[in-house]
Image (cartoon, rainbow, N blue to C red; front, side, top):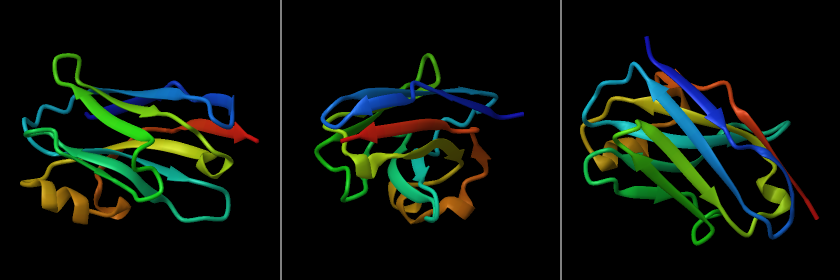
Length: 128
């Protein structure tokens, strides 16, 4: 039974920062895909950042490069997303996701439908 629980969302002004956390339990794979997705009203769910758990090589959507940082604490089995220089366009429900995977490239090619495990989301609202 894999469970993912997000936290850290909230409301901030443009230019502010938030750090999202995703606590994972029951996910015992030593390698695999973990990441963050977001979905705004009326839009499809999009990839924000993913990471392959061997080597922790990240992938970032172009819209967040240089502003967001994905990281992982293997001991605590927790995934983080540090979000800086937030803009109103970042407003969305943010979801943590996980799935098994053999490589970094596989993780980047894995769309939302391919991730097996999801959290319930945490809302991020950025005002101008």
